[in-house]
Image 1 (tube, rainbow, N blue to C red):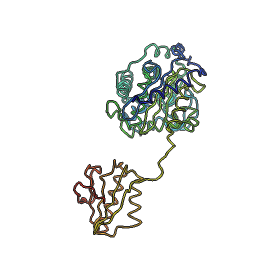
Image 2: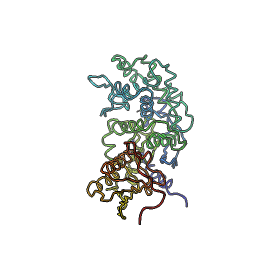
Image 3: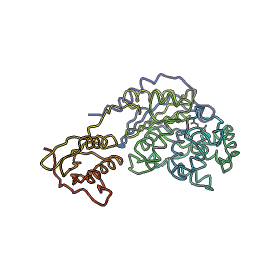
Image 4: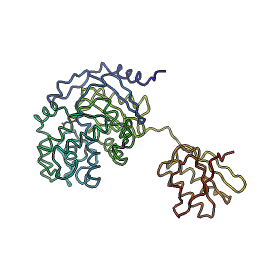
Length: 419
Ligand code: GLN
């Protein structure tokens, strides 16, 4: 059998191919030369498999899709508090290149608009770093995220620098308020180089999939970003990634995303997929027209809206059985907050009446961190009630089962405890 997923992506592409609305960006002269008909889609799962359709190996400049990853680098290099003092996380509701700062703090509202992204670039590496070191930091991180060595498109960079008056104006304003430390020209040159890194849709789908899988690059297996950084990056993409269209985007599509003026669009659905599209014609917000439709179709047809859920309730408690002086609690599936709540609720509502309780985790797929802590706390409380607590966990799904008071549940040998 041949998997139908590439056919499905091709079908989406075919249905949108004739849509020629919008126009290529021309405020950067080199981008005005792009072939407007190029069109590509890529989807990478958190298991590291990539599916593509169309011009999937054509390279284009990453542009503003660099912003979330540079933000992730700044969080890594400088910490949340330091970064948060200089760039906010509120949606701006304004165009990407607006000359706006928060009125009291003078911080840019978020790292997705140019003011915030120029600030973020300056935060890379550390205070006093050389401009080239900051560009190298972005290039190294983006390469690790893509799983291959990326390069800067020098023609695009130089072309943008010739017409960068607006970004220079923003940078001078930032420096005036003490948000930027360095020479505005150097910072804009570095930021522009960061935006000129060449990628294909395959690259951006894999980079997005790394955010979707908690910072682990799904092909190389490398933990490129820590989990909290991946989460923060996705959060700011969700609220501000699509600039002044962020609200309607999230309402319709529901995938944290970031666009670039070269026509790229990337999105990441936590725990599931990274998606990339490339089509150079842009709408009035600077977002790819056909790219938006690709995401709209994928969201609807594949149920990828983040706020959509089919999981109502949990079946974490598979079975409860009393045999002589022992109560067996058989858990199953994924024990997260909800799953653990079901177990704790049952123990609270109908406390075991036997002197021994055995928690059987042999059918558990995994415990989330909070699920683990909650179940262990339940076991600790049973033990405080004078009950002898045991654990049947042949696959060791429940790491560190110590009850927090120096005692351990007694370990039941590997065997199903169900009847
Ligand atoms: N380099 C571009 C700029 O700063 C990026 C803008 C974008 O992709 N929205 O204007």
